[in-house]
Image (cartoon, rainbow, N blue to C red; front, side, top):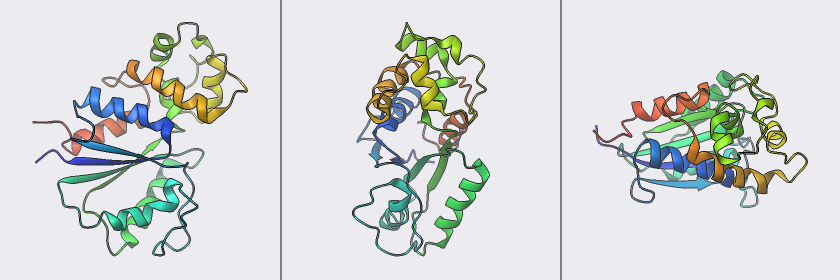
Length: 211
């Protein structure tokens, strides 16, 4: 099967460094040639009416998602729409079922859509990779996160902030800086985070790697 072009729909700018690192370093892809990244203004929620035009004032991922999927409906099998969403405290199966039901309800939708979750959030992937944190921030107190189970719902960005000595600082600005520094050191060969591993395995199954 031909390697697809990927449109990756992400919650926000802080997800961009991680996804870019996954697609370039793990899969050897080139941005704009093989993929585009589309960050939004947070997670949001699916609209009550999945078929109406979304509000221009609400630029969150889930609010815009049904309309964006309709807009991609004419793309062929050579394009993969990848949607990466934070699970937060919603059970994985519940959120995936909700997204699958939304997709099925659309009369117009792209042929290849992949929903994947970051459990609890992207920062959970960092907590599961303390070696990457230590390489990016040698002074980090990684002993404070060693006992956190991978993908545990613990308030991941707050725990990461504590580990980095940034407790109480502004989350949005810090989260992007953390991602930019930590992502280049992440282990994508044997990731400890189950949700990150599912994302990588799903991309392999979608023939993202050149054969």
